[in-house]
Length: 419
Image: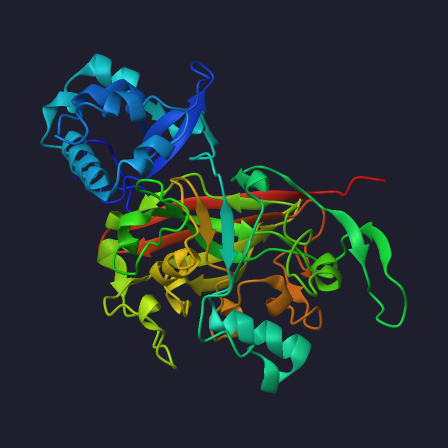
């Protein structure tokens, strides 16, 4: 228990303690913080209290930066030491923060008074395609049930290199893109605003540890040492632009319009109690992708659409545990060629869909390519997103009496530029 009040519905109890970067009107400098209840502990104000062997000489540097990259670089032993220190400092039995009124006043900020920023400088961003249900659904729509999965899908975690520059923090509006489309396969393509704007329910992990060099791999045995933590992610998708452009090299302009992530990074240590069995894999993966330990997590994820006028409608409930490939396998596969990794690199899981229609992770699936309109609470329907719609993801792990959550991942659709 913490001396900071935390309601049972809060995503941020003492068992969580996710990291983010925030600023305030009083102090507009972005700086690292930890969420606890409805408060933020400003790490730049308490760095001197990290007195363990790995942080006593480095906390003053890493916790006063405008991003978490330097802290991510310290490695998983330092991350553990920081967590132990934070749980001690925030405990109801520890007086150093609890009873120091001046330090408490300086160190705690209400989340309502904070502006959240991207938690890291993201050098590179890769997105995978690791839900078999999602891949099967999309394949069935466009190629038929007998050819839903490509021959390589069960042998490797399929992915593509995305655009790091358009990754944005939750709350940032997303503008409907313009581009080329071919709505009628019998006629030439047209140029205009996207008509089939979609979301994708994903999660993503940040790479940590020392940067690797070109030619160096991260083995499946060591992958966990390079996974700092996870966030919710919305991979906004312009389906009509994507359909016309993706052959032969895959996603490009249909994806680079924006990628939204939640601001709080939940560490893998906080997620440890929520591990569940890995999804069985057949055929067995190659040795470089094989691991016997469970690295799957029971994370409940919901997606809602809030129209410009009216209340939000929850349209999907899915779970991280549905993913076929684990995030350790994603990282090991990404580096098997010797691709180097840097702390702060971001890797998305791909759309997370379950087996039931209400657990599908995109509007493409939920409306089955626009043939089954989605009913909204206000009586309207959606096949794809409309201007003014706000898409809101929430995700959390449920324990007995508390939640370990990610907060919200939200973005509102703005009209396309008139060209």
